[in-house]
Image (cartoon, rainbow, N blue to C red; front, side, top):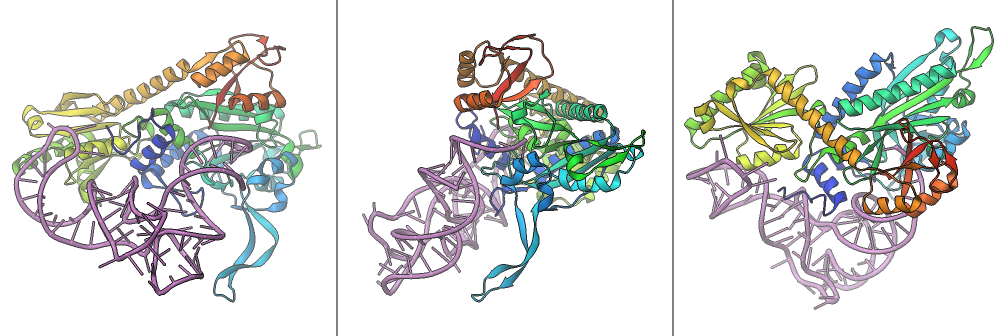
Amino acid sequence: MARNIKPRSEDYAQWYLDVIKAGELADHSPVRGCMVIRPEGFAVWEAIQKDLDARFKETGHVNAYFPLLIPQSFLTKEAQHVEGFAMECAIVTHSKLEKSGDGTLRPAGALEEPLIVRPTSETVIGHMYSQWVQSYRDLPVLINQWANVMRWEMRTRLFLRTSEFLWQEGHTAHETAEEAQEETLRMLDVYASFAEESLALPVVKGRKTPFERFPGAEETYTIEGLMQDGKALQCGTSHNLGQNFSRAFDIDYLGRDNKQHLAWTTSWGVSTRLIGALIMAHSDDEGLVLPPKVAPIVLSVIPIFRKDEDKAQVAAAIDALMSQLVGEGEVAAGEKRLSPGGLKTYFFDKSTHQKIVVDWRSVRPGDKQYHWEQRGVPFRIEVGPRDVEKQTFVLKRRVDREKEFLPFAAATPDWLRGILDVAQAELLTRARTFRDGSTRRVKSYDEMKEVLKEEGGFVRCHFKPDRAREQQVKDETKATVRCIPFEQEAGGGKCILSGEDCDEEVIFAQAY
RNA sequence: CGGGGUGUGGCUCAGUUUGGUAGAGCGCUUGUCUGGGGGACAAGAGAUCGCAGGUUCAAAUCCUGUCACCCCGACCA
């Protein structure tokens, strides 16, 4: 058992932090609520970026970049928006530092108009779109940006909620309401497929209640995931902004009818929170478990030997194994590649830069096992003298920690791709089984309270969304309406709180 | 921002009540024996005790302020 990771059953919050630390994913920064994303963590983010970016491009989007700083006045142009974000904005008020009498530095050069550090970019992008869009021929505008944003949160947790976080935000403008709605749902689907296919994270698609909507949106759609402790995590949102922002920022165009019309806009985003979702959905008491599709290292190889002649034999066998897996050329390249502390790295897949690491560090094999296990590497291979003799190797699976003996000849690129795919599928199945087993339908408010208290998870029930009622449930159970799911198999029923007839079920859960 | 807790080598902590030369274990370095799930022995390196003031002959320890982190609330991707 990992001695540096508290078991989930004892303290889930501590376990989460321990997994991040053991996996070297992130660290706290000197500034409150901010996070340093370490190479292991950033590589996961890069994998997420690469995958999502391709999906955005497949659906016709292009990347651009808008500035970090936004005039304060922009935020106030959309009433709901300013109300939603005003409380968590960082503001730039000065342009320089001056030495004061006692030798300390103090801000000087007060700005005429304060600038805010973007909490999201609807406003500045709306401003630019108003200049770029003149005619229906300029539409749709389909732009995404990869950026950092800042929201001065009261309480932060690594990856799940940090003052500054990385994300992508798509911002589109369309000629018609229908097109904007289609776009909003299209991108929700992109997110949902990505979550399931690449993160092995089953999500529920649905729309938010007005109470939970993005400030300034007409409609907000969400993908909701369920974590191992029974709490929900909003993993991505897609907003139909209607004409609210085009009205506030004058995004209008001359239509086919030769009249001025306001454009219809959308926005959608996912953030580094997804890494938190990955951790909480798949990892175990031994540490991080990464879905192969986003694992920076897909295989670690641990040589085992006593004497020098054993070592030479083992090294020869591993070289041969590597040649089979990555080819002679890459083995030669790997030999020349800089690598710290006795780690040899070879690229298994040049398109993703996913690596195979051979661990020649001079530490004991047990240490190496824990080392790679805690970093979530999907597979480990051990090669020792006994294996060389029998022409076999030991394969250990991170997903279920099982091991098997395989002949050297088995190790081919197709074989590795195959077992990675199997592991990926197993993680999804496992997470889906958990999610489905933790989703319960209730018929009364008392029953819901009982379930939330005893088991957590997703609670489906008939409920008529309403600000006061949602607040009441939140106060009494800490649960919120995560979404009104698209899948509505239950038909009509009575609201568990008011008894009114209602057509749809909602999903309640306690959320991060 | 309110309540509670914690800041001491890279990590986990002791020492603070009662002021008096900076401690342990793990990790790190070197060497030997080792090596199939966190090894043994030996010798080393490494901290102005979160930061800033103050009290005192003397501060990790007492006082004031401040910053950060953790837990619980309110707020949120």
